[in-house]
Length: 263
Length: 175
Length: 196
Image (tube, rainbow over all chains, first blue to last red; front, side, top):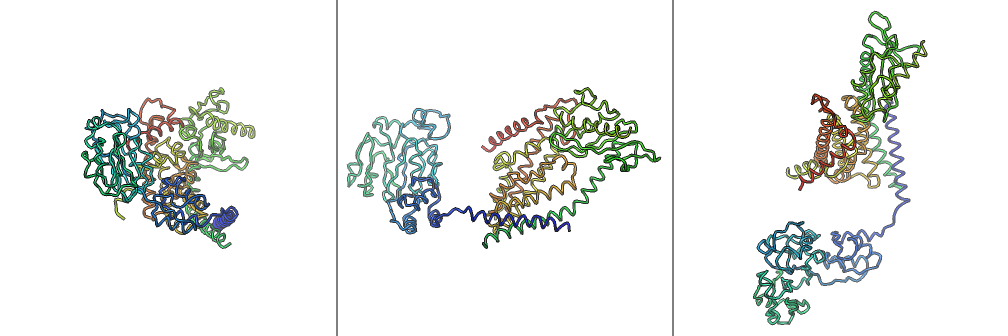
């Protein structure tokens, strides 16, 4: 008998609660578009925000409500974008995929430090103190703010040198571009391989004092380029990727070896 | 409809299993718990009225035990009383001799503040009651002889008042 | 399943994800029960008992629980084991049971237990859930006993009820809530330093 009462009381309570919850969930059910789950599933799920929406579910909701176009996510490949477009019955807006490159190739080991830096070990903090602890005013500070910021883990710290971007993992989301306090990172088309690994606007004399591989604005690369894709602006070589033919003459010609390739 | 039934059934099963396990555990522990309480009570009664070897429930008063020695003479009374403590009810067992002098006080259960009010269960506080008559059983602050436990005035007062008023009631009844 | 992974799951409950100093869960019971080392030990055992068994049961049921009744199921499981441990302690260690008083039933709403059920047991195998529970339970108990030692020695001059010093005027604040908060704060600070 002493077993019947607990069994009965708890059992009935459980039954009542279960039924109650079932009824409540039906009454207060929120109608969701079944396509929403499918779209969210297809999106990479990194919530990087490159699309301009709050996370992947934000972009998915915007797509479902018909307020936006399909190709905004740089992290999903062409195939994914087409699949999403198919589910929603809209046009697949496939744009050229981009990858990030760090436009600095200098030696940033202690040899090139202005002095002993005792602050917080982030690029942002260092950049606030007189432009940074590296001799070159435009150079990479090496604390890896971009490394931490990359939601895909595509950037790797290298000691004594600027970080290295893994092109396979890079989705071109652009978060590193916004993170770098020295604005060293640029998104270039994924089918182009050559870039100027320097951002120094200093005159040649100063560049030579602070870096062995800095751009001195000599212009040889511009002259050697078969399609005039390079031009010198503010003592710095600048690449126009619409004209670049991936010839690689610039890399061979540069006397300071500051043009690099992603390959 | 079917999902609602499913939810109901699932919780029914889980709760039933819970109910049975509790009933089983209780079945096995209840005797031990009950006998422990019983043993404690007898032990406590001997503690508060050492002169007695046998305790008999009073036929004339509620929650009173009469204590008898080996010779069969009544040597005192044992009372069970409840005090409203700071954060719990304090179960008290105490005894008086035939002259209404306290022979011992014991706390059976309480859930006062651990480390503070809980010290009213301790010997240091309770030994003060021994050998005192009802008039002296008040906190020193109120003119009596009992030192409250530091920072546990409410708990101390509750116990003191409970003992005092019980003796008073009993004295009124039996005089 | 390699032993390194198992080791990691267990150790995380002790240091990197210590439920009290790292995850900051279950603080209410810690502050209240840490006045005496004996009580702390009892509480640590009771909590670990409930944590281990509720993790086991939740993990066993993990593939059958309908999502809508997830929470009621967790709570019923935890409450059942808490009641069982309450009955057992009352029967076998009545003194500690008396001292812990209302804090044994409060194990039901100890955040650590429901957090581990929700975050771990419902997504992992029974074996790993046990390891996780043991690590977390041990982490909780160790911290609880450290705090209780500090509070009992400085605030009462005793350890496990045994008087340590002869003439000793206790630092009363250590026995009161502020002392508990201060102690826990200091320990959290030390833990952060250690983790760095």
